[in-house]
Length: 164
Ligand SMILES: Cc1cc2nc3c(=O)[nH]c(=O)nc-3n(C[C@H](O)[C@H](O)[C@H](O)COP(=O)(O)O)c2cc1C
Image (cartoon, rainbow, N blue to C red; front, side):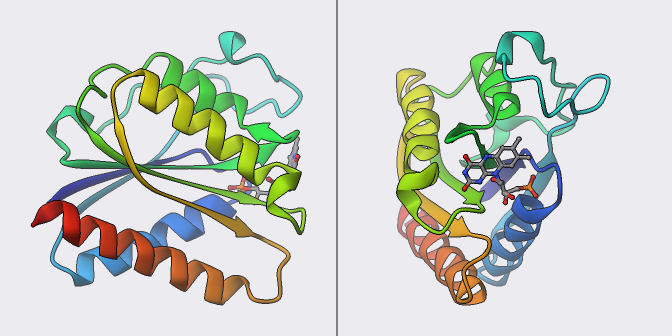
């Protein structure tokens, strides 16, 4: 399958997880396209209004992808404003298979991870996507490496099922 991974990542955590997912999926023979969102004018982390954030156009064409994986950090107990800005303007999600993951710093999923996933899932579903899988990585958890491997394995399992 052709799989696009689009992430928002300011300090690199979400990007690192995306790389691990990419490597795992490539081992299964999928064709991967990974892109990190670029914010016009650079990122201002105090800007919480998605309507005031412009995202540079992607270089990959998501309409060509069989599966879209979205990843981003938790910001103030929510999905990141940049991810919301990106999704708000995204077209072509109708009927598209999608997966979502977030990274966050606080030790419990209810401290932002769950609500960020819920928001991203809500936007994707509203735009007609089929959300097949979601995951949360707690950055400060001592078992983070295991969490990332397990997330990548879960993504790979669902991708194989979707491909068959
Ligand atoms: C402005 C700001 C707000 C944040 N809010 C939260 C939060 O509500 N809950 C949480 O667990 N982590 C929060 N974090 C931590 C990030 O979610 C975490 O470090 C994430 O892994 C960063 O991903 P990145 O390196 O891909 O940007 C916040 C970070 C920033 C900069």
